[in-house]
Amino acid sequence: MQDTVFPFAGGLGLFLIGMMLLSQGLVAFGGPTMKSALADFTGTPAKAFVSGTLATMVVQSSTAATVTLIGFVSAGLITFSQAIGVLIGASLGNTATGWIVATLGLKVNLGFYTLPLIGVGALLKLLGRGRIPDLGIAMAGFGLMFVGLDTLQQGMRGLAQVFNLAALPSTGLWASIVTMLAGLALTAVLQSSTAAIATTLTALHTQAISFDQAAAVVVGAAIGTTLTGVLVTFGGTIHAKRTALAYILFNAVAGAIAIALLPAFLSVIAWLGKHAGLDAGATSLAAFHTLFIAVGVLLFLPFVPQFARLVERVLPDRGEDTTQRLDASLLSIPAVALEASQRALEHAALGLLDVYGEMLSGTATDTHAARLQQTTPSLNDIYDFISRIELPAGDPRAAAQRIAQLHAIDHLLRFRARLHELAQANVDLTEPGYRWALENSRQILQSARQGLEQQDLQASMEPLKANATTLSALSHDVRHAIMKETVSGSSRAPHVVLQRTDSFRWLARTGNHIWRICHYLSQGRAPEKVAPAAVAPIDPPQASEAIDP
Image 1 (cartoon, one colour):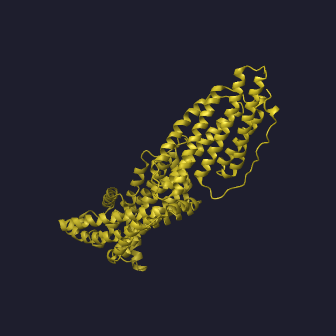
Image 2: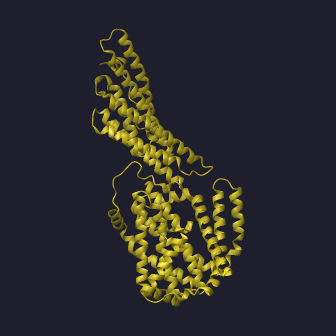
Image 3: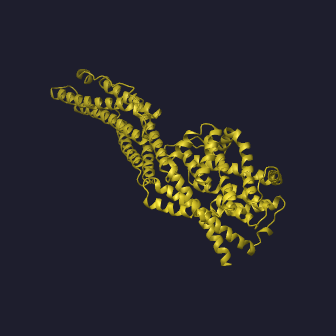
């Protein structure tokens, strides 16, 4: 028994570890490229489908591609419709591993020839710099996969002598359903459909099970691969749950079609074997896997928008919140997590600017205090999220982005405090004496909102800085002029004078906070190019105009 179970368990373990290392290494090594590719090449369902297929073939894990995709949707990098196209592509791309195992792993002793890869990968991990260690992990994982596959083959031959797997039901619809559920359970235990399919291919290659049984197991594994995505969405955002549901529905429908029409699919495979030279056994099983997923693609891809609306009706949005896209599943993908926190900060900044705009226009509402009260917990949640992002060692760009976002939070909290002070003071900024400061503040507000809404804050930095500096300097001069006028015998009451000087100081500090918020948010987004300034600062007022009552 030990000679049978130990090689099987060890081979399966080596294969799983190899898959994990390969997937983790490739995602870490090509993570930024993968992010850019998925964000740039998902404009249409067809492009999204191709992106998902290629990404999954590269990282050799539909689970890794799906979990990453859920993060992209939660962060708002791609739309839900685009995500569905990627998911469909990921399901098809996941069939590539079966072809590799069937055509190479089971026919050539690659475990022996990939041993040097494990050694080279370990050296790169220990001695490499930058992202080279991630490449080393991927190389070592690739080698371990085939070493594990060779060991798994040996164990499967012995296991077939102890357990008669071929005695399981193999004919009829119910037999196929039971065997499919076994494949689903195997995938749930292994947490990898690729490992379950590789095990099935090995069992078929060693004649431990029949082709009909293996086909049903592969269908179950294709459905079971969605379980990891479901686990990721527990406690996640509505966007993550929708993505997981769409993935489940696609694979479940494709699997149900495969089981219901299993005799027809097997006839097609037999025809391909007879007329197209398709090898029997493991290669035919890989072809079956690709075939029934391709049928699902043909059924779903033309109707992606309708499918997206169906899922959105099943899981309706309960309302947009500043922190709604801060999904904990993003924390292990720094580039995506920082994008999500950046968008949350920009959303919070726009909300505060809206309140400020209403105050500058003299619009007094009872909702200001409540809206300001809701901002503090949201900013605290964003701060907590940013502090828990798992930044990779030796990535100064990501570290600089996080520092800039933390500075932005600090100024947003200070800006919120200034708005609260104004709401409590009940100052009428529409009085003639505040005209120049009010116009300058509105110019600052306009530049900031324009930069945030167009996601091009660099274009607004010069006018923001100029207006904030001008407002601060003139506010200082005007406050001193008012105080001198009071000493000279002004008729104004002392509390009116103090309120006016405090108001000018408040406006200057508020303008400075808006400027600094936009500065740090622009650093957090790290734009590639700087646009020219679009708005000129306001001309300074005359001193007499500034202090008129």
